[in-house]
Image 1 (cartoon, rainbow, N blue to C red):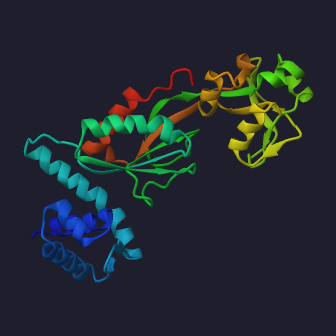
Image 2 (image 1 turned 90 degrees about the horizontal axis):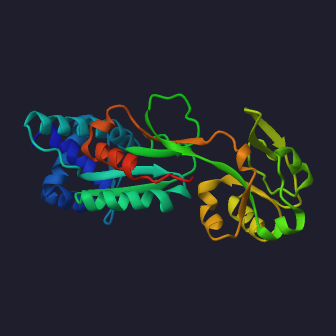
Image 3 (image 1 turned 180 degrees about the horizontal axis):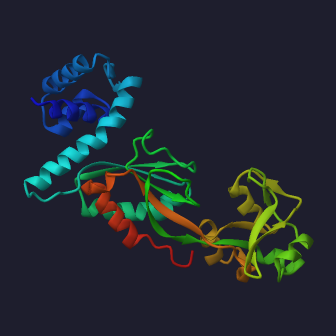
Length: 297
């Protein structure tokens, strides 16, 4: 056995949660996987995996070790295939991060097509609205909405998303429709209390970005009750269009002030330097760019 085999055994144990599963995934015997792990732990001088009868989990040192060697082993395997003029077929586990509400409706359909095209790939989708640390969370790629902070990550712009003001037909029948953002002071607006600057909505007025202060009698920390309140006529809401597109299509809410919408928010795919050379990541980036439908959003 080579040292690369020992590394790959350790990676498989971490990814699949047990020595038995690692043996099955690598087509090696349980004894061989156990021997590789023992050899690797002896070489580095620290326990890398905590073992129980049902599950094996990386130790703190093992988790840090995994994050460092996984990209390197991926690169070595990829280089080996290319050097031998072999076809690089996507395989293994692809770990993808995405926003909580965006992932199921927009990303999962792309993932479904990707997995049908590349049946040797497993996908682990992790949803969070935080800007993930790809290295710390062992993500191969993340989809993020918003302006990107400065970092060493590579990025591919996938498009941009609108922010809109909306309300129920019943609200407009009772209170009328604002024709300019400055008229919002006369309307009941539903504020999200956890925003960085609650009660300030951004618009594009006379070609310049402007914030307009709004207020109302109903407010919430989450968008779900804000959408429900708007549907029931409690006031106007302000949201990314993609989150309420189904409500617009169903006629439950209507858009106003569309000519004053702020500059759309960019959406990117992010990955670490060198990861795009992995066949599974490269293939997913290509499919994401071609199949993610952001039209009318």
